[in-house]
Every structure is written in structure tokens, then in C-alpha cells.
Length: 214
Image (cartoon, rainbow, N blue to C red; front, side):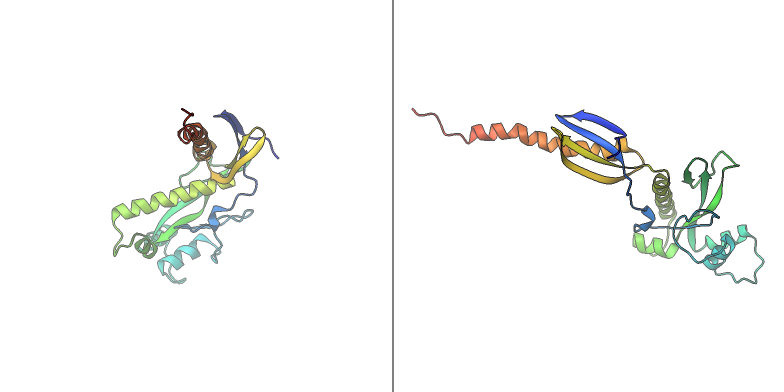
């Protein structure tokens, strides 16, 4: 097995954090948004049938090919039916993705959109109309989905192994972004009840012991 990226002794156990080499692409999950990208070298995001951003925006806005609207006007029309965020890619010694522009103009640029239709938002929130608060919440979800996909692109997916006396007693994989948050805390949460049971076992045995002979 590969070397751990982090290791600690915890409550008589050893916790080891590893990169997850077989992590699942988060775009295969049940996401709220659709990630539509175009790139010469990489296949990014979700599969789609649009050969260019203009075709995508025309379809979403319901505008015919004969219309001479600019991309900005097409996006304005599309945003009447959907919540749309731009998606940018940074390509330099690895890939990174964000919904805001990167500071390097030479190795980055807009690569597509992440969006959700207003109809989907209404169904998701069980509402008849999409309020401003719902829009903001939907945008937060879309941004979070890109953060997760960015972690996948950057190889920041982890798993833990908990050992005691050199023997593996628990393991779990598929933690995205920061191993020192969910992954490590989950591993510690596995150890804590084990320690608690060990503490409680002698007390329970004493309580159940037969009284000494008189």
C-alpha cells in the first residue's frame, strides 16, 4: 500500500490517512446541477450534446438558430429559466476548477457552466415559485458541487485505516477536499466508542460479580 499522507497515534490506536486511488467521480452522483464543459483535451463534467456554449444557451433560452443575439443576451434569456454560474479551469501541473476566475490569465479561462433549471429548483424545494433565498441556496449548492469536483480533479480524495497492534480494525474511503476535517474526525469517532466500551467492561464485570462468601 502507498505511504499515508498523515498518521497519528490516538487512544491506543493508529490512524492512517491515505489518498483514495479509486475514488468515484462525483459527477456520477445525484447532483442538483448539470456541469456542461467544452475543452480540446479533457472530458469534463457531464455528458451533453452541445457543440459550443452558444448552442447550449440557445437551447436553454428557447431561442432559434436564426436569432442573432449575442452570448450575453442569450445568457440573460437563459437565466429566466435557470440559475447559471460560469465555470473556470486552471491547467498548470494539474487541473483546478472554480466558479470564479483564477488570477492567471495564461493557464486559465472559462470552460463551461454549471446550472439548474428553475423547474428543478421548485421540485427540489417543494415550492410553487423560486424566491430570492431559494436562488441563493441553489447557487451555494452549485458552488459546493464544483468544489467537490475540483477536489476530484486535484486528487484530494482520502480514506482512513484504523489499526490496533498492527491489525486493521476499520477503514473507510471517499472523503473529499480536506482530510483533516471529515476523514480524520470520522476515524477518531470509530476509536472513541471502542475505548468507552473497554472502560465500561470492567465496571460492568464488577457489578455482575457474585458477592464474596460470608
